Image (cartoon, rainbow, N blue to C red):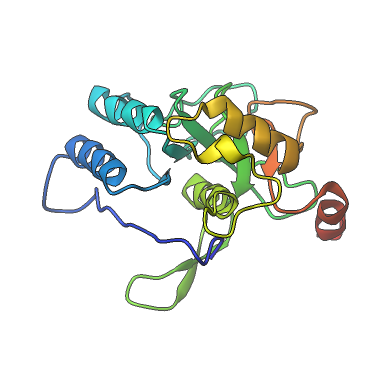
Length: 220
């Protein structure tokens, strides 16, 4: 619902029957690249790195595919402890923490904290589609990551363009730094501790400018 004009590809990697999970995730990432996707959302993670999944994430990054990953839900509410979750910890992924939709958007106690957290998204009581039809509310960094993925997808709309989007963003194999500098300048609002922090990274990604943001969230 963040990017209603987007084409969405769904790759199942968890289930009671089927492949080994690491193999399924690796194959799905490679298949997504071959299918020509522009951005991959990974609302999943684990404490231990998988060489196979890391290879696939690195390949996607080398092909100019943006990889967004949930920071993880093993947090203890302490900003100064470090919780690990892969693929979010790898440099090729954009790690997304979860915040509450309250005044000042506080980080959620369960959201992992570490120096690799890049940005934050709403991750509490998020209205989500329900299997079999209807809607449900869910919480987790797995909810925050799709918010950011949807925002980036809308900004990367090739058909309609974006008045702020730099032309070379969509060149295949364009450097990750170009995209990050762009969203930092136009769509990132600092929250939590001033500057980059272990809970929310560089800040909250949003369509709103600072004035609109303050008006929307100050009354919550």
